[in-house]
Amino acid sequence: MQDDKGPKGYHDVGGEQAGEIPMVELPWLHWEKQVEAIRGLLGDGTRRIVSLDEVRRGFESFGVEKYNSLSFYRRRLQAMTDILIEKGIVSQSELDVAIEAAQARWTDTDTKP
Image (cartoon, rainbow, N blue to C red; front, side, top):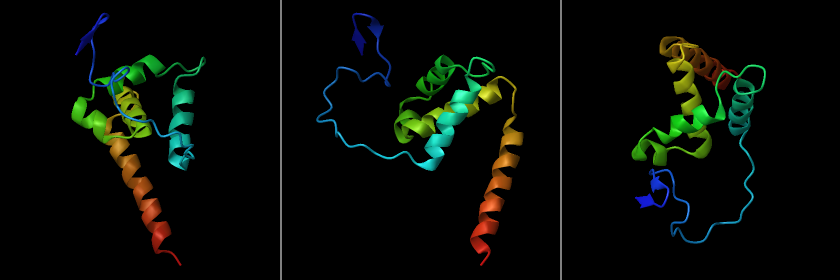
């Protein structure tokens, strides 16, 4: 695709026919609020660890299939994670260990009376 500003990416759907936009106010899920809070902390004026531009670059480089399979906040979370790994702030193995520990906590909670 191309417009007068150059080629458009698969993520750039502005101006395309897409039908009616549902005007429904949806409540934020708890994890979505957490993702937004983390993005704010990583990109605030003090830390400047991950900028909003980097997050955007991250999810715009997913590829059409991955981009379309993830929700808005899941794309943001994945992009932030990718950038933190890319910058060497956290490694994939450290992240895997943390995810496993969190899943174990949830499993323990589910099995207790």
